[in-house]
Amino acid sequence: MYPLIEIKTIPIEIQMKVTPSRLEYASGTTQLEISRDQGGLSIRSQPIKVNIDTFECRNSINPTTPSLIRQQAQAGIQAAYKATATMAREGRMMMEARIDQNIIPQLAKEQNIGQPANVNIEFLPNVGPDISWDGGNINIQYEMDKLNFDWRMEKMSFTFIPGDIEFVVTQRPDVIIKYVGEPLYVPPSSAPDQSSMDVNV
Image: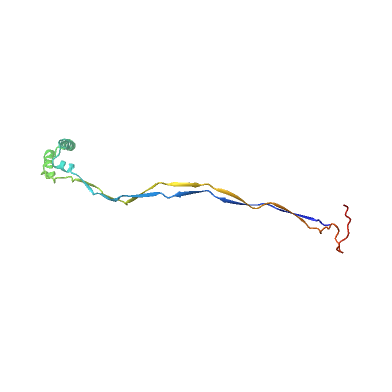
């Protein structure tokens, strides 16, 4: 026995179309301003500096009052040391003298002849000037020109277009029922290959 009915189902078909959202920009008026900052070249030089201190040089020719007092005091100290040494040496010679020696003429001879003559000749100035210097330098600065760009945009407009989802039914659902058996005749068929069948009415 085989089935007499064939049932076929057709599913639904849906097509989905998606349109994404977008933002549209309408161009406006644009202004550009360009300004220039001018640079330049800067050179600064400092020449060498010579320092000459002539105080001691002038003081050796025409001493100031404090310097003169200091020089005279130093000369007095040296003279006192020299006189003390001379008196000590002559006193010792006189203490150790014998009767047969004539000490006084000998001392007078040493004082007058033994010492070189001092004629007070001196080269002036006897102190040179104090000379020093500071090294010079040079400073060079160069700055390039600068360009400034100022963009100004006016009447800017944006339009937002929302997204869209569209559903399209391309095929509807359906059920197909098909009879696949042999035909039934009422009354029975007279065909020889058909078997008779009892039909109770």
